[in-house]
Image (cartoon, rainbow, N blue to C red; front, side, top):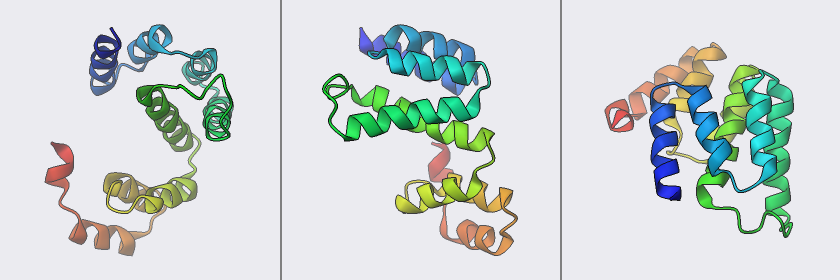
Length: 137
């Protein structure tokens, strides 16, 4: 059953249907905290949503018993939620630091951060180093 939820959520996300994506995740989510963060995001309460996702991640990393067995897709949702919230809040420096922490895995995010921060030299360098065709696949 979780595989169906994951496929459906992925489809809604690819289509840009944030409400459909959130609706699927409200059914799929194991934790009430995840549903709360999704609701805050839907209401446009970006700072509160970011705080809720960050709190989930912190509690999971601290080994809190209620969050220890969180499935990988839900952990990924928290991480994606933090990134979406940071974009909505124009926290480009934070996103840039996050993308730099995972070298090679976030070139599109690094490019977006450079663009939004008007760091044209860095953007030019990133375009030279990254093959975006492999990212689109």
